[in-house]
Length: 515
Image (cartoon, rainbow, N blue to C red; front, side):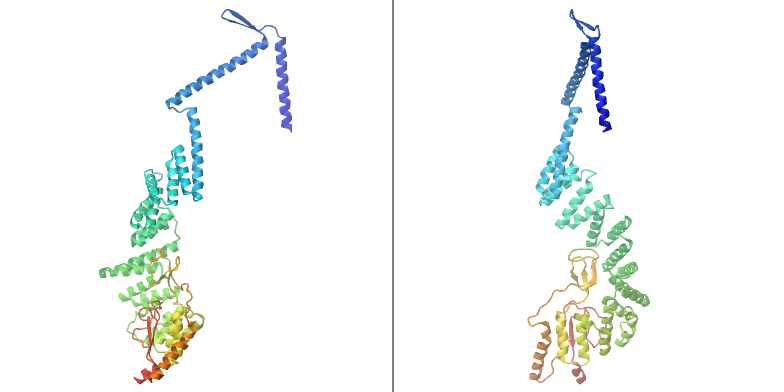
């Protein structure tokens, strides 16, 4: 409000001053006399002031026209002028508008429109480092890989865009399955930007797929150095790579190196089951049984596993089943409530023909967590205790449709593997295999799984009575996924290991007595 009042007062004062000055000039005497070509012009005071203002404006206008003419001549000559800068700004504005529209089209999935806008932007801006990237990504979007590759190759010529070009071509080679070229490109991209996490992961995976374990370990060290990997994860994955390198050594002369590498992997990650088993076998081969026991106990404490039990059994291969039961107490007292510990104790007692003790070792597993391995052990226990054949066949029939129990399963794609590998055979993911129970699909039999014991038992008993002799041994195929056993190979009781438990043969105790 005050500012408005001040402006009004100033305006009135100016008008008053002009009016006062004009009145003063009108009342003044004299003026200006101008002679031009023999003609005299006499101007009064007010006219003189007006003529002076017109003259100043004419001079200003003259200089502006002269400057415009000079700028036009320079523009025609190609020099940088205000006129050329005006047109440059106009082109730049149109170019950035087209570039913005191209980015919006690319984000909305309109590939062809994005290419058209990128071409328009290139026409105005002449900045291929911006427009070529949009063109390449839009070409990939519409499936024109040939054009995309051409654009990425153009990006290789510029130092500022070389990494983008290499990365783009690398992804194309990966998509087409050309992993050899992709590996070379990943190495070049890694040399340019060693801190780039995506390039680190891609290079590590490609090196692992090519079994370049040494190069993969160097890449892993770079990830740790640049802060892209926690130290505990680094130790685990470095152990996986060391174990993989040891596994690939087939030469007998290099067996010592393989053993040292496996021991190194176990020290870096004691909970890595395959490394612990391989390190224990290396110690056994060197005659260092106490070291082998120490490694297996530590691994069992972290993660009980059948492979650890099998390696523990190899420490004393010549012992009797009863001796083995006593020696394995060192292992089974570690995590006694774990599922694998209960199954191990049951299998050891089966091998020693301690059937009641095997039943007690299983505990409530047959009721709460029955799988093929548990049910097969129960069938063997029942057979060993002299149960009816119908009861034994009932457990074996249930084992056919029961889950297979824990297996090596990829955490990323749920693919089941028969044995541990550093790379998933399905999705090629690195270090994603875990010993866990895979998701099971329901299996529906025509007559229902619960009816199998009655149907199988009744049919075989009728046949035996008609023939006037005992039914022969029952042979049930549990498939290739049966879990491992630490029982010795010369045990009389049935087992469920992966090597020799695909077929379980149950002998009739009466026949053994007759023999």
